[in-house]
Length: 323
Image 1 (cartoon, rainbow, N blue to C red):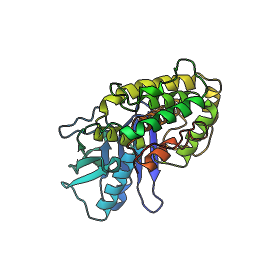
Image 2: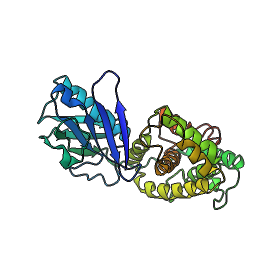
Image 3: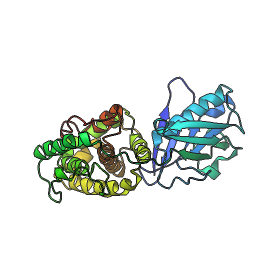
């Protein structure tokens, strides 16, 4: 079990989230609202209401902390009270959480062991996601550009055992499980697998220390719905596993993890080796999701996800990319 503790300097409460197993958020709650004569708030990482059970969806630690902090501020300001309903935009507006401010229950029932009040207010919520759209495919005029981009990345990437060079002539990939950009996804996977393990781990931990937003992976998974590529999520997960195995088996990985664990100021449980492994996996998956959606992701999404890898992976200039 790992814990993430965040406190705003100007407020008398903090947010604690619990992950079990490490890296998999379970719930979060406020600590300190008793000072304002209020019950602490409790939020689960998965929806408990509505028609969508969220089997493939989870609120990350930072997302839970943001929701709890905003609602705590509203409670303190008197803008929110028991019995109210509130909707919260998630994933850059691609998803919405509809929350109910419930009746207080004993804190022990909700495992809020550090709550400042004997009872906590549960915030059950329903998830509403954007509908699954149709895949627009690649404009015919972009195909040659994508072929050149794959060829360039393959030419500049060291060969990695277990990864075959993708065929640029496979564009457009009309029947591949990874979607129309499948050759590009495979090229990116090989490039990620070839990156130096120690340097990658160090840069990813730098991102954590800087508290850069780690929730983009969920946002990208939701974006896949907008272009009808939900079916590609499972193949991306399998390919992610292959890349992570290649990186973690490389000389220097375990040394890099040991060094990272000794760094000061690591938030939300990064001293736990399993969490560092999850950090690498999430970053790899996010890069492959961007590759799979590279014709529709926004420039900020692309830059945020690829930043830690750009010294080692020549992603090049997107072809006909959005925003």
